[in-house]
Image (cartoon, rainbow, N blue to C red; front, side):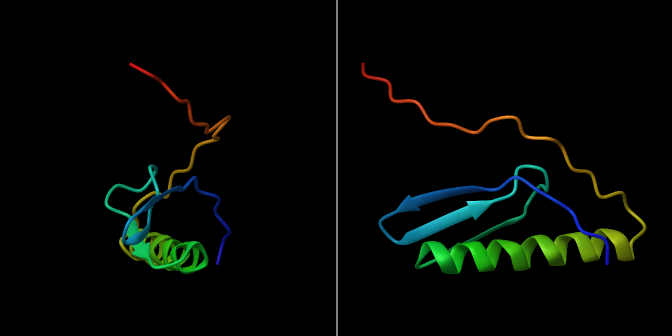
Length: 74
């Protein structure tokens, strides 16, 4: 299987962690710990890619230059 690199976003809330892959619409998951959500998003991405390949659909990736956060007061 070919290797692919995707960006992911992980957010923390009161219930644990939520992760999604902006490059793959509908590819998201959650977990109680950071480690768990990372493993879960890897599985979700792998399944998403396998499904695309099985349906002869393209698997597109993009180069992420920077992902950061900013604090704003109002």
